[in-house]
Length: 330
Image (tube, rainbow, N blue to C red; front, top):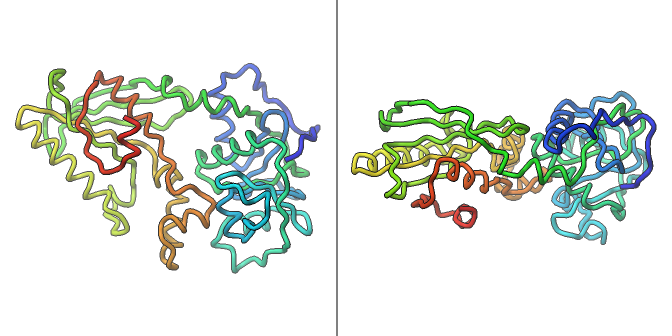
């Protein structure tokens, strides 16, 4: 990732924006297929959603997992686990080729024009931020680097991402009584951050009592399992079992809290989760499928759950989990 400036890139007033807002705008830009400019150093056009007729580049930025799938991990610059990889091809990358390199579903439809050589990355922090922004946008982590004819870019700084993720920005947005099938005595509480419009919710079962630690379950959003009854996971049954256990606890004089986190697909998003399902049908397990997509197998943000409990005034809990990462976060 070079540091060459491009005259077509503009600031969009980023200096007057809060750090969180610049990240929110960058995520929105990636979803729409518009370029972003990281730290004033490099312009990146998302391979999956990019909409820039004639855009091309001599280099691409991909994840380490995708580089390994493309058999590049034997090259020194592609051998660092979890570090983004900058690749150069025998000819410039256009968007169709970039998409084929990013999406394993296109492996057989679009012949790859190698060989590809991994090159040193001048700005590793910016590269890592690009990978995380792609995940937050729910797109495949692959970019054309400093592409010609990319158009205007949204400026964002790597340091802004930490501020955007700061759970201190999370606040209670609304709350209401919500009788549910498991227990009529229930309250729903919605949480929102000013710059992250994902709305996490807590369902409080029974009457909150400061002298008694509640049963608590962290449940990540799963449209296919929670709503559609998918047989590819047991998320729906786990959700219902947790609600029943909390209802039993409430009837015995206790209470429970279900934290429903808007982190579909273990944090990679619904579309990418469905892509992984397609690969699973070809014989890949969950981890291998995510790796082929260039995605982490686990990307959920559990500290947000700790902040939700803090805002509810909960200081002690009885956690329903066998996941050590959840235990550590709380």
